[in-house]
Image 1: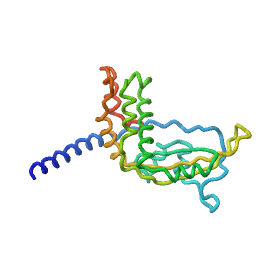
Image 2: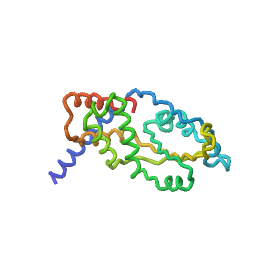
Image 3: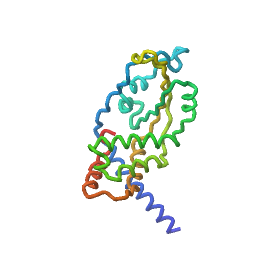
Length: 221
């Protein structure tokens, strides 16, 4: 019993230490502006629930113009990271099957890894040179990690007619809104980071770069 009690205390202390670091990673971090979305000019000619008088949700309007981070500024998503899974095609039924089959448990790791990769690439001129094998190893680890806490919040679709290209058929775009608590994400990211063991190991300069970026990883995340 004593050994079990001590093991439990140790686990709580370890979680508390990681949680404290995760708190520091998230708190008071200035967010770099996300590049404005600039798809080819198009007109939305149909959308989900239009036939019954529905309107385009606020989060969709904001995402279409400015991207995920702008959606995070909405009060309803305060304290959470926003991820949007997107797919487009000329086949409505195929996209509907993709939407219906989307699973936060199975599909969120790809969303997380893509955003982590973009954040790391944003911090240096050449990720492969700046981080060495750490870059690819961390992205692969994030893709394979069993993330928890991601919640599927909403989905939407639009039918777009592009102003250029002339004779092209209208195209459907399906999007799925997923959110996760910021502290929970940071805690899990810390777990991924600590378990990353690249081969070959980083050089001294690469380790310096990695440490610098990790200390303020969530700036602009």
